[in-house]
Image (cartoon, rainbow, N blue to C red; front, top):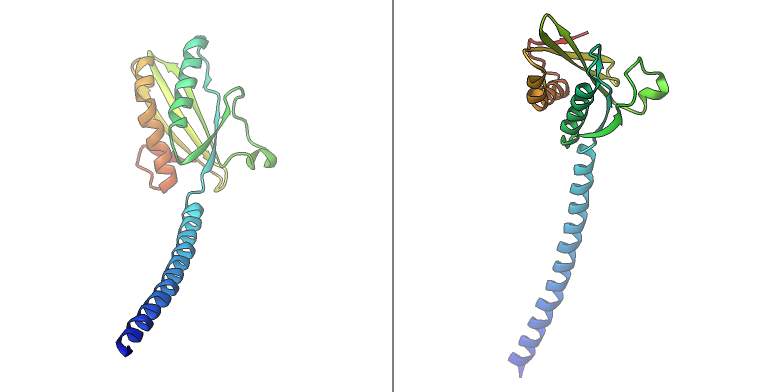
Length: 171
């Protein structure tokens, strides 16, 4: 009879301890998982990127509009930014109120000079009050379109990392 009581009491101890340990482990899991998710959310803060109209003296408005749409669609694929469409207006110096609506300004300037297309991508960091440009010359307008994603991605990456290659200039 004594052995039977021992088995019952041992089973009760294991059952009670197991449920307490499980409860504590589950509680710690919930606490740590919420802390991890909260910390992850803090690091995923996205910057607001305002995309403005292309500045160009070209009379070919259809081509300029196509380029504007292409740059916008390429920027929209980037996961690090909240894209704000401001293509209906040209960029002008932002007032203090407007600066609160975007963290970064993007607009291209495209001019035709001596048979070449001069494309300057301009990024303005309104938080740090810095302007970055990337100027490239193309033999044809088609090449601007082919290089859009690479040039935009490189410029924004370098601005974000503040690691500017020699062809980027800070004003």
